[in-house]
Image (cartoon, rainbow, N blue to C red; front, side, top):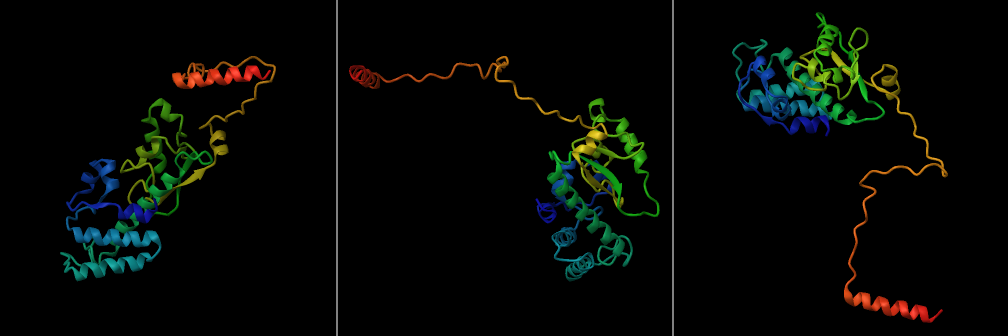
Length: 259
């Protein structure tokens, strides 16, 4: 599934929710629903998600997509209570950028996760900073706290975060560090963080995986290998019909007379 398809498959949830209410919703709800915090007008949500899909498919630049949103809301008769403010969905540029950017990155993160999960070549990934922030969050502390809260079997799939922040793709730490319990980036609003793939050989060096040793083929004169109970079961038998059995006996007698 492409990022644009991920965005377009969502259904509009036109109920005004706060950030805390959205965070309390299930991860399944957030993946299947199109919503904007504080908005209960379907046409506003629809305009933003259509614009986000256009950016994701590469048919519009972010600036063109914001203009598309402004035009759609103006035609629909939208009136902001405080024009140009953060709450202005038409001309509040900072809010526009955050809504579009978050949805595009979540779609890209989902597509990335679907493409890499189960990969033998890249079984792990690393949390890295991609964008500078004036007041960056302490992601190492967030990682370490999440790692401490993991069950023992999950801890073995991740580094503790004292150095690099690396974990297997299927490790629960990715959901634990996410504001929305998503196993893919972004893990919070405007975080500036992303993930990079980690090769199998690197995951082995870091102790996240044990290198699989090649199995030697048994020698021809060696002991007979043991098979499972399933392979040692008797094959199913087919009963020969009486008329076919009679014909078979005639054929056997004819063959014996030729000798």
